[in-house]
Length: 517
Image (cartoon, rainbow, N blue to C red; front, side, top):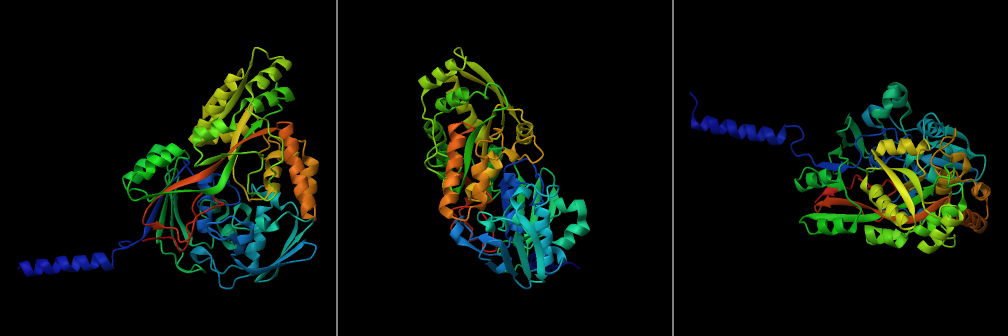
């Protein structure tokens, strides 16, 4: 016979089970809404797209790292390496590894063999998009299970940037990579605070706490990293309490509207992405310097910053971002002058104006500034015929040399060499076997960029970098426009566990100390 007492007893038992047995009932789950419709690759050596860069530091470590929340070259600290030494000639770097660091999913302890495997992979063109940054690496050797020796063929400007927790510097499990083969790109195995669980194309990546993390068990139990390419969708999901943290719109007006809401914190931080307007000199009439100079005079940096908002953008005066080691304030900058722009066009044979074709992504942080540039050029007599395409198509087309003007935004390891090599060295010209992101087909600064790479005297090195920037801007291979900061929104009870000032990964670093208060 079922009595009221027995029914109450059953209910109590069910409640006890719910609180003590049900998996995940009391989990701390962090739900993140990111830009991008899908992952490009979950191999950290291959992808440099923002939606991938944000998640990599949650899964992987480097030999060294920036202190969380910073990107100061003086704040680099040990990560997988507990210490390092460098020879007097700066050609031999020796790293001592931490003992007992475990890879995810039972792949065992990190050893020097994993570091050798990872850095050799990062230096190989077929397995890494960062391979150029390891061209001076002569050898990587495992001296013993916890010691790695890296020998360089020539001095590299701030070599720690090649082994930091970013891009090619992430350390992978050799055993997992060999076992998984091609599947490793969508089944990442690292040593970071969070381990990969599941990936669903165009939907999400799921991570779980790495309870054996060498810095301690994370306060967050699970992360759901959702692909949400539409900005309005991300905002709506946040308002409906479906995400706790999301990639925001980098506009002052939008930020002010968000800050009116309850229980929200808007984070504006660096590293800022420098927006350069690259002029493709392989497409006529941009091979005529007078046309390029006219474009430089037609563009108003101040107008762009006013449109975006000074809270999230600042005018640029160099093709290398401000704050990077080697940034120059003395490079030639063409002032906004429509009269001069029209005069130069007339001298080049375009008194009645000209039309240029260009492609631009649908992503607002690039599309909207390009529309402003389009209007600024129109006032000088230059019609910009814009083709708006999906973000993935944009990256494909500009690398196929299909755009006369390329508005490109990027942040890199904060040393001038990286930016100058990737965007302005002739061996990086798109369409060439070693091409990366030299959209302008610049060659003018090759000698300075290459000499700076091996210059021992720091003053001479800075002078070479400054000369390179001046030549690039004087001949207008690119017009520096503005630097745009990162904007993220979070629930007010989400605490990163550190002060967020800068991030190399374009997003907040989620660490073992990140928690809900």
